[in-house]
Image (tube, rainbow, N blue to C red; front, side, top):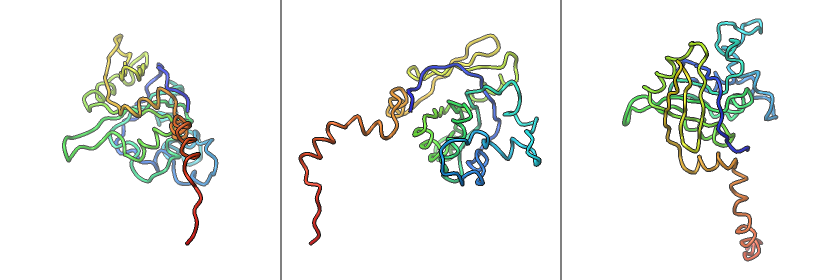
Length: 214
């Protein structure tokens, strides 16, 4: 996994809540045993007409968003079945960040992202940023303005700076320190394990790993 670097990119506003993993990548694309080539399947049911042509009404097909790298959505993004393919499709299309809001408070609070999706995102280098409903509403309010709004993501400072309406609008986000560290260092699960390679080697030399049946 490559280290996360600050970047600036176009925001694609997908104004939908409860976007489940079957919408992100329909089940018929899960047959592949490879981990590549899923970008064309992203949002397939919304993205294409019955005859296979791109639906011009769907935002992903609009010319101004062809190079978008920041996906803005509503709460509970990535809900539904556990399929890592959903994250692969988003990353392979070119998105590096997904922003979504929580809704409600206390026991009634609905998170910005489903737990399994968020965990899969961490493993695949996709940064998920949860902001308040008010802040996400504000970012959505910039959608469609020209020039189309862009955002600068600064992970070390934990800020999203939206460049819109001739101004810079800064939003701070929280992130688990361990997740932040692995993104900044570009460490996947194997990379984190290898940080302890010397300790593992000592353990293997000093412990009997043979088992006998009695």
